[in-house]
Image (cartoon, rainbow, N blue to C red; front, side, top):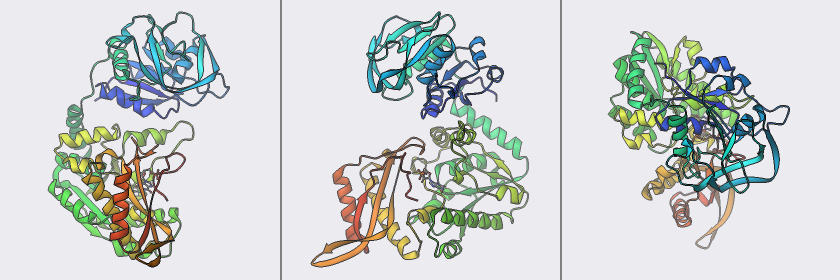
Length: 510
Ligand code: XMP
C-alpha cells in the first residue's frame, strides 16, 4: 500500500535515521531521500511534510549540499534541523556564519513567542546542540521563536509558509521535549495522519508475499538472529511449507549455539534443515591469517554449501533476505558513503541459482522488525539476541583459526555472556563478546611463572552498529568476569576490557 510519507532529506547527519524513526514512532510513515532529489520527485510522493536533516557541511562553502530550491514553492511544510535550519536560512535570503564559539551538548532553550510548535512544552527546557555555524540574519518573513545563550535564533519560523527551523536536535533523547516538538510539527503544522501501524504492515506484507511468491518455493538461510528469524516466520505464515529453511553450522559458532538455534527455530514451527559443514569451513581456514581473506573464504564456502542444499528443493524461485531499511539507505549513500553491509547479502547465490530476492523488511528499522516479531508471537529471548557476524568466531580469533583456540574462546565468551544475563545487563548492551588475541603475556599462578593467552572483552552501546560507544560496565562486574575466565578457562592468563568507541575503532577487532 502506498502511504503518504514525511520525507527526511539526508545531508549526511549521523542522526538521519533517528529522525525517520522518531517520526514513525509517532505513527507517521517516513522515508529518507538523498539531498539532491528534485522537487518534482518530492512532490510526486505527496508528503505531509519535509524534514531537512543536519549534516557536517557549511552552507557557505562552494561544495555544500543544497536541496532543489523549488522545494520551498511546493507549499509543503518544512522543518530544518541544525544544518537543515542553516540551509533554509541561506537559500531564503538570510545569513549564516561560522561562530567563534562552537556549541556542543546541552543548552537551555527559552521560548520567546507562543506558537503551535511549542504546544504542551514549558517556556524553558534543555536541548541538545551540536554546531559550529550559526544563523546571524533571518530570511525575510521569518521570526525568532526561541533562543539559547549561544544561539539567538535557536527556533525560527515563517508561520504562514509553514517553514520551521531548529538549531538543536529534537530527535535525540537529551532534548527534553524533542518528541513533543516533532509531534507538534507533524500534527499541528503538517496535519499528518497516523498511517503507520505495525499490525497493518504485517497483514499487508503477508498478502504481498503470497501474491509475489505464487506457488513457487522460497529458500531461507537462517542464522538464529532476529532479522532472518522474524522474516522466516512471517513468510512461513504466508506460504507454509513451501518455505525451506537452512541453518549452516560452519564450526565458528558459540558454545551450544547450534543446539539453541535449532531448538528455537523448531519451536517456531519452521521447516528446518541443519547442515553441519564445520569440517569443510575449518579445513579451508587452515593457515589463513588475513581477516578479509577469512571473510571471503567463509562467505564463498557458505554460498557453496547453501547452493548444494538448495538445489534439491523443487521449484525454488526466491531467496529470503532480512535486508533492513538502514541497509537500503546506506547502499544509496550520501556521496560515496558506505556500501551495503556484506552480511545481508548471501553473495552470488541469487545470480547462480537464478533466484529472485524476497526482502519483506526493506522498509523497516530493527526495532520495527522486533515489533513484528512480537506480533507474530516470537519469544522475547529470541528478539533480544545480540547481532553475531556471519564469519562468526573466525574474526574473533585474531590470526589463524584452530579448534583449540575456538574451544578456549567459546568458554571465555560463554562466561561473559552468562554473567551479563545474570546481572540483567545483556539486554542493556547492544553487543558483547570475547576476542582471543594472538599474543601471550606473563603472569604468576601460585608460585609459578605463567606465559599464557590474552582475552579481550568487548561490549558496546549503539543503535545500529554504525557508531558505537564502549559500554561503561560496572568495575565489580568486570572484575568477576575476568576472575572467572582466568580461573575456569585453562590457557588464558590475562583479561582486558576494550574502551575504544566507533569511530575510530570498529566493533569487531578484525
Ligand atoms: P564493525 O566491526 O564493522 O561491526 O564495527 C558492525 C557490526 O557488523 C558486524 N560485522 C559483521 N557481520 N559479517 C557480518 O555478518 C561481517 O563480516 C561482519 N563484520 C562486522 C559486527 O558484529 C557488528 O554487529
